[in-house]
Length: 419
Ligand SMILES: Cc1cc2nc3c(=O)[nH]c(=O)nc-3n(C[C@H](O)[C@H](O)[C@H](O)COP(=O)(O)OP(=O)(O)OC[C@H]3O[C@@H](n4cnc5c(N)ncnc54)[C@H](O)[C@@H]3O)c2cc1C
View 1 (tube, rainbow, N blue to C red):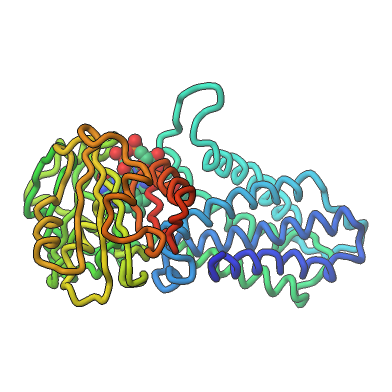
View 2 (cartoon, rainbow, N blue to C red):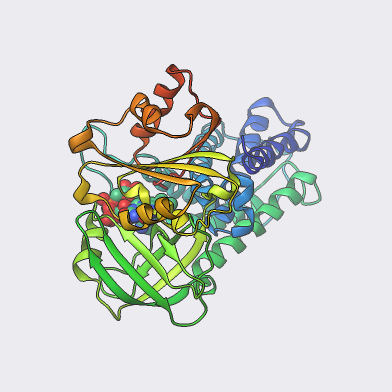
């Protein structure tokens, strides 16, 4: 477990522990109920903080992609905890601290609970049960932003509801601190997004079989990103305004960037059809920790399909003096889909520490661990495996390498899905 995840779960559990001395003079049901609500509240506040994408915390979690995965797990836990709080109704039996706002706070709690339950279920359930209907991402994304407002409602509820401890109790101070963190994070996310976006203009669009390659130059402050990182891109054009994450396939010293985008769904297809030179872009980034410089001296890079993008950025920045030996395998369904071959082949020819193989499944058959090991100039058992591509390919290769007794020392991969 990464330090960040450990810290997050500890802060959540600590809220539950603080509830024990604060309410144990009531009864067991009330104690469990308030332990659950306190933990849920701190979880929600932390989730709001994570959604603000503070770049400084990325190393603690292993990248923004990992932060979003944890954010999702926190959401699932919060849903379970608020259900416990709702069904184990606290019973204060006249011991409560009271205030004139109690009634309003009780209503805020009730509506906050209904709203949160609905939005959290919508986040967890991607496909409507017993149908093949997937809840569209943009619908989910639009509704998900209201979670912050519901959090503010719940903060009001926890501050002014009848409760068996007063505002000087450690639990009250702890929860109020997280209320402030959650509300400030939400306000930042909703009101100040321009602070972290950069203005760009499309300078070139190339439509390859495998991807649309978009180059853009900065119109002000340039993006700062390391090779292998990703950014959020949106086009200031009707129908293309929704921000989507894409790896920065190349970035130069002036911040000029290149993206390689596979038309896989509505947005990426519309982007291919409609984007044109001169279009204005808003970019945000770079995010993520996928950079070979963090890795061992021997590395195998395995790219599956459009998962080649971080390797394109990393390979083009290799100088040969990295003190790392790298063997790259780029697996495509069909050679026509491959992008950036000139870059990989030129670097392999020029540099002594980089070798490159294209695996074309149409002619070479399905890539498996035995083929990977046989074709590699580096023994996978002595190397890091850096992977980007479909999860089933990664799982099959890692399992196969283990069976061959060539388990990589470390497997690094990018999560290509946030929700
Ligand atoms: C860190 C990261 C790096 C990526 N790098 C690349 C890349 O270099 N090239 C590339 O072609 N693809 C990349 N992707 C995938 C790309 O973001 C999705 O293919 C694209 O957003 C799909 O949008 P769509 O509407 O066309 O497809 P849909 O079919 O609508 O969506 C397919 C899936 O993409 C995800 N998705 C959709 N909309 C969004 C959104 N606004 N924000 C986040 N996720 C969304 C959802 O999980 C959804 O289920 C990357 C994804 C991540 C998380």
